[in-house]
Image (cartoon, rainbow over all chains, first blue to last red):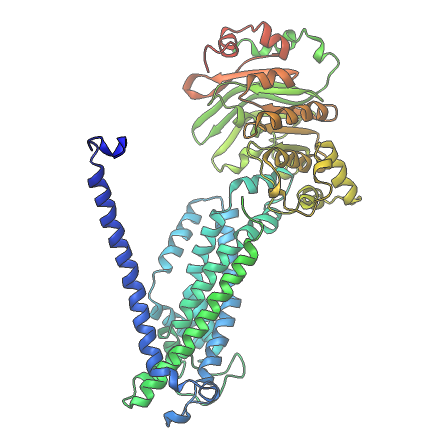
Length: 294
Length: 272
């Protein structure tokens, strides 16, 4: 026996290690629970829906007959909403974050704005739907169109994007800002050439996570006037539309078993779309993260 | 402090005869909010000399240094009373743009902070944004040569500035600073994060740079001040934790025959 092990344990080492072990077990359990629930969901969905997945399911229009029903208009609708929302949200959200973090003097007004943006992030999505209905559909007269839907989604995720972008800007070390200002750069030159590229991985991650939330939202779009049963693909910004979760909800709420099954198939399509977006997020982030190890 | 206004009579040493003053702080108070961080700084910075600011931690060395190129403006609560004259013009005048000040009075920071870009871009960027119209390749080479870094990096200008060692990064920051052709270089403990050999290289470099530039350096290291500087400014934390200048003198004089007992205590290692 070694001298260290033979010495009497006066420091309570055994007990301390036991406590550490218990907590480790609790944390592993929590992780397993989350993974288990996800696995269960995936298994259930794939068992029900995988056999219905086919090219024609993706390309067909919805139908009263489940065997020829397809998801095409909803898929295209979701992609439209996604692209438009991203196009509106990114410049506005990043712009607001840049103002708040890089330019504002942190006065009273700025602090009020900041607090309220945090509050807005917690407002239920249905409220944004009503706002979208009042402003975009009625006031601006855009009707229940893709444009109204995308603008409503923009309002919904804008606070999240602003907060995530601010955090990304906050993570950029001040030494980098000082380096730029120290050679006679203006604040804008500093932001554009150094701070923004350095914050871009975080900004993109936050934006795409927010978009992932938007892709699963239904309530505000229902209020704005998305339809659940549609037999054409959207042609432009003014077109009426539906989205994947809405289509899935429509099918899942029907009594026939076959519709339950194609709802599951629809969920698989939605998940694949989500995974594609998240993969794109990771690739973009890695691309921008190259060369930034301060 | 009574020694301060006697600056001119103190300078018996010949280091200052016939030398112009580039920067001059006059009755400069620096505040962070209500806190007085530096009290009544009076200081002349002579042209093409190295002036060292020494003193214990908390004596406001960096605070004072940063007021010379308006870097303190970045702290929202910071403000100053008094004046800093640059060739007779007050840097804190209402119509002076701090961005223009920082081009003329460059800065090298405590921790090397190259841009996460190529070595070439690190040097070229400042010149580019300041509207430099000449040959950029030449400017980059000249700046890197002046910073004694050219031979080490000439074959890898496209590599990231962050791939260099700490000492090389700091010389890259010096090259970046001189590429915008400033008159004055402020250095905030430029060697404190470096090993002794890299430190000596920076010190040698400073002596070379002093032929063309006015240098104001903050250092914790008294030996460093004694080795490189022409003028030494000793400051300490005074009443209400505000920094105060105690004594200014030619470096050799200040280190061999300090006039104020507090200076003597500090340089002989009894306090600080």
